[in-house]
Image (cartoon, rainbow, N blue to C red; front, side, top):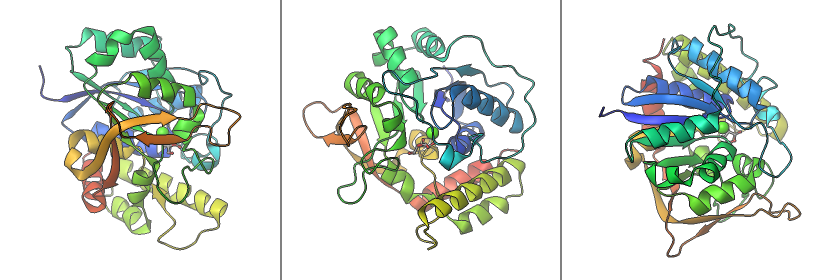
Length: 319
Ligand code: BDR
Ligand code: CA
């Protein structure tokens, strides 16, 4: 067995998803078995096309891309174009990829890959709403104990202040499919959760965008441009201008760093409850529960400087 970390990335690109995908592509210790896409930041057709565009851009035409669920399990569709732009990638120019993507569904690919691999060989990074993962769990529960680690970006466990970035109570990936998140947290094993507030600890500010530009590679420059456009969009929406409050949070790339260098993160074990009551203002809110069921490591703190250096060093290795 190869010593590389074999992973599936379940994603909704998405600007920070794009940075996470480049990060994973750049890391020599990662073997991306496939990218599975899900309705999230933009509709799934666009997410799937974006994943192929990013692979092409980074000269990774070898990575297979699968289209997944086009709508949440029970709730109505929500997207986040106001953050990521209509195209999901901040309006940047890409050439149309020559690769057409796979015809197998994302859910079938996840099940087949985990079932055919050795036990605990494949990890999943879930950086969009959890619709594909929940569907795969329900369709083939035997995959659950076989997954090495499931690293989820989602939720918020702030003790004071806002509990979300989409409603005052809900973070986007949870709000976009709370029923799927509920299933995954109930059934999942060996889950690591990177919540909203940890992504915010590793914000890309103007200085970091410059640091990426100084790498003078196409991929790092694209990341800087997308992050800058997103920061401008967020600042226009929130009216915030202070350098300490603006910039773009690197939510999704945290999952890659956490897989390879868990020592950069610290947290506590417990389980996660998700509010699935659509009539309640707290719909999509996550609650930490410390009890006998400890299937989740919920991250509270990231080593910002080490993380940012790790990401920049990785991006330097891409074209
Ligand atoms: C999460 O929501 C999405 O908009 C981002 O890509 C990230 O996965 C942050 O709340
Ligand atoms: Ca995402």
